[in-house]
Image (cartoon, rainbow, N blue to C red):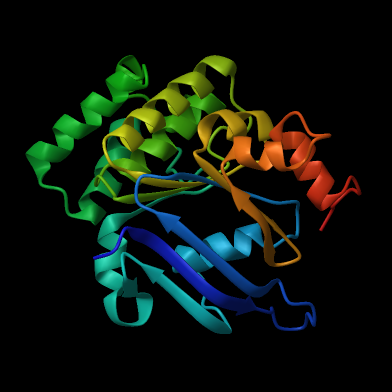
Amino acid sequence: MSDKILYINQLNKTYPGNNRQIISGLDMTIHAGEIFGFLGPNGAGKTTTVNIISGLLSPDSGTVCLFDRDYNTDRQYIKQHLGIVPQNIALFPELTAVENLKIFGNIYGIPHAELNKKIYNYLELYGLSEYANKRVSTFSGGMKRSINLIIGVLHNPDFLILDEPTVGIDVQSKKIIIDSLLEMNRNGMTILYTSHDMEEAECFCTKVGIIDNGKLIAEDTPQNLISLYPACRELEDVYLHLTGRKLRNI
């Protein structure tokens, strides 16, 4: 197997009733060990691309391969090795933290003893041990987002998709989440990360790709991208230079 975790070639997607191509001839590759920041304005095609990679949408045309495999023939293998942390909190609010985690752990097929150990290890890591048996509806936004993240990594995926994992949470929760993700990456997990926080992306990502109008318009390490534009001092400057300052309310 090659070191390509994700390979996208000439991907196209148009939604019914909309003549504009949301994704237009997109090419993108993510290699093993990378933390790839997938950045773009509202309506640029970022969410659609992530949904296609996650197997939630089918493209009109083009190639999407994960782990050198195709969803059409190897969907089960891909699901076993892929972790997804959506931006929207996907929890059962009237159940406890442990009950939520057990439901998803059972879906993954994690053996009972192993699952219990993982659950309590992760709850301790995120400072949630004392809330293990409390209902999620009583949790703060940062606590819910931490549980959301634990669900995505319970089965030790090789490739983790994170959609705005730190949006709307306090600085302390954000640091715990970022530090734990960096540790997972050091242990071999490849990460695709979307965000509108350019400062976080510049510090966190080993590589970034900027999408606009359904095409990847820039791709490199944050520092290399910054060095390409003498007037730019940080990744946010590059992002605004390439995508413009016009509001995107799509």
